[in-house]
Image 1: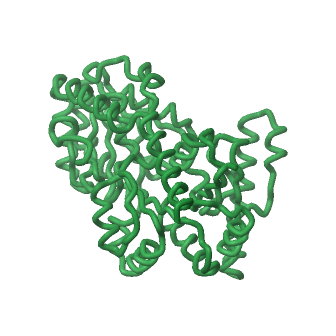
Image 2: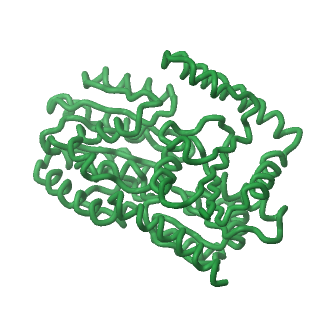
Image 3: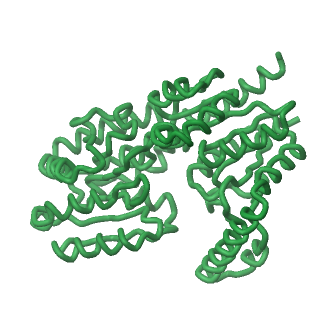
Length: 408
């Protein structure tokens, strides 16, 4: 009989999709409970091999969407229905704050999973904790995965710090992708078993992506910028750094690629204005571009810049390493566990425009630097983030937990 794993996670996240996809044919029966108010699963989640629960799905048009052949009509109708459902979820949440956790407890009771795996602490972890408090007895073995800055940044807020401590005091297993976060979890009261430290969005098929990086980094003339700007992302700092050295970039015929803007028009407008000011070619990557296309663009870029005030490894860092794009990454991620500063990448303060601009100038000044870094980073990815390696480790961790249940 197949063992059951219930994931509580953001169903529309590419990270959720990539992690689950690697174990869908590995002898487990898989369920996914959406921890955020969406009625859409990420398009790359392998359908038909798992059951998905959407607490916010008051209007279901999935069957209608299948019948619509025009991509644009299907896409915008899906967005419209999702928006309506989000408003309904917010309204019902005001009237009945417990509806999400009640739904989750019913799912746990019906599915009777052997393992519950919460991916992300702030949404999935808090929600699962509420469910455990309601169920009390015979709660399944619970894994909590730390995403990004779940502890390193949110842990500085007293309200979140208390909630994080409650989650970590109640779960049985903890996984993360930074050694930094192992120590932080223990500081916040975790007493259970620490699982292997590894990328929590899965690994990469190196053979598949070989064709994405055929041009040596020194021959590339694009600078790729992660367009997140908000509570953590600092895309504006990267763009201001580009503005500071725009004349040099124009003279050396560099262009810009801006991605992951998440519909932020301020980022888009700022990027366009700076590109026009310095006569730089610019590519703005649409919001719902396929993940593989993003990786392909890293393979066309000499430099990939990702800045935020808090993060884990940062998947975009691994993707730049995979494709040979020279990473310039904020030191607030645990990039120092993957690259050697000044050799295979450059670590910078997330809000220092001058230092970011100097890092860019250093990377465009030395062909030897970027080409050597590409070789080092490719070797690192092959040893630590290869698809088969991460997949086997993921399967092994679930098998070991289920095996320990049999002997308890």
